Image (cartoon, rainbow, N blue to C red; front, top):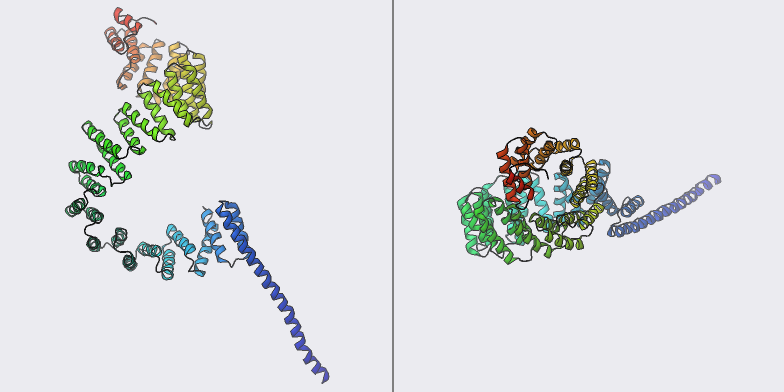
Length: 584
């Protein structure tokens, strides 16, 4: 009896001892867990700090370690998940794991505006319409006063393509409209929703409501015109465009819209008139003016009768915006298109004065100077350009070519060698082009051996360099050496570009040098046929070739044409005078 009582009394003591041990263990676990939470919070803050410094590797590593310490921290999970989604690319496992982390955060924290807005937007981008709709619906219920969320919800409802959801989107837009008032952006969104449900009557009803809210608004009338024009309701569209112009005669937008309307119905006379009206309005934004003018030029620049009107438009714009480089750029492009290179160079000169930092503009200006045979000006501009872009391979290339044309060969070769130095060695086409230009400079200087070395290098690097092939072949023919090699190179250029007059002339001249006069005549005839403005050299070659084919009258006529282009050429004078071929 005593023994049994002792056992009964001992049992509670054992239980108490066990409870004490377990209680101590629980306290240790709780303490360790709390320590991990604190470490995770610290690492998370450190991660955000590194993110601000754009240190992505440290950012990701710290987030991952924080999540390992405290997987229950959904804030950490969201940021880690978002980063994983962004870097996943084709890794579907990483992507899905990151996406699930973001989704879990949303489900646990529906009131986290920033993170959940990002999650909803990602679903929009991914085309996960059901999940996007769920997110925006929840967020709208939590943040009913935030229009950004309401807009997202309405868009998600429309994107679902479900008729009942589309109807709900209209209710959401009306709620926004009640807070913000009637305006074009909301009406535009409502009309898109009506389009989905093919509710034309509601579209026109919305337009009428917008007009009723502010009937003297020029912008609202333009909007109405655009909608009616979209449905080919021409009379109604024009009525509202006209009303917009009457309400605000200085509205560039109204004239611009009416101009596009006339263009859409092929009323060129009215379109022409409206373009001028629109471009004269100070209120029309410059980008819109340039867009309108670009379309106008594209449609009419080939008609010489329109050139004075187009130039008048440019004069108007330049008077309004004298320092806008974009206008000078567009004007230059137009002048190049109509082959007025002198005026184009003038406009590009204004452009580089306004914005000397643009390498492309300097190169265009120098190329236009060369096109105008004003090599002195090209050199002057090139020297200025090099101050801004000393390591530009293209500017140095054009400068070197201009020096060569002025017979300042040492300066030209110096610029060309700088171009070669700054050209990316991996860009074999560019390297070949520069080597070819160096070859041209050496040949012009009278150093044929160095020229042929450069041509050979250019062709070895890029066997498709047609300019190097043609020039090397022609100069070999001029020297009367290695004519078989010259023929092979010239044949490549003709095969690649069979209607190139320069290449055809080169091949004809090689055949002449090889005494193959019949074939030479066939190719020189093609060269003249394909040349819009045959040069003195081309006519001279033709005369020599015709003479050797005993076509004496034709030869004399060609020599005369050549002499007209180069009246100081003594050899041509001699051939025309004696009606005979002479060697140089």
